[in-house]
Length: 258
Image (tube, rainbow, N blue to C red; front, side, top):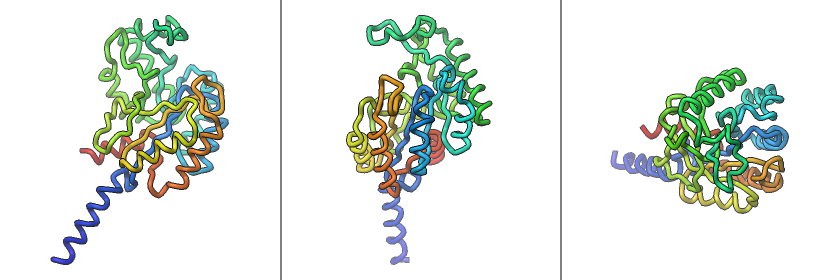
């Protein structure tokens, strides 16, 4: 027993230091917002070729969703997550940098019932596409209020987790499952995104990346070549990094943190 016990202790300690994230040193979640054509045309083929699955937060009024529902269904069958990003992408307007927010979709004037109804009907529509009842949510524009009141608690029973936007590598055991931090990528280089992942590996944390355009179609864009560079790095380091949809990471954390 004197010889066996120290060996067991070392093995458990080593796992605690390097394998907290489902046996990996760190976790990376790739998320893509707004249901864009480039997600189907550029992103999914690139991810599939590397064997990675991601989360696509769909604004279901988008033409790229309504006109290509069969393709989104195939993506879900193939292991990608279809997340809820509302029906009409309402955000808080009324500021110079939010001039694009239409008055009818301004969260400052949405009632709590309006935001709840829109989000829940989006869940119903997504279920008709992928057949799933468990889902995660992403707050449009990272806004969490309707008529000035937080709606996080109002929708928490409808989702198992939700993603916000806040630049932070999240330590294991410190994840806010209903407003999880992420880094928003706009004009980011492959090198800068890789450095974030490297930092995540070094710190043993969770790195959530948010993309809109990948190769165009959105003002917040990352060049396709830069995105491919990131995917190539993740592939090269897949022994250390768990790349998974947000819903899989949330389920893992709900099991391991309680």
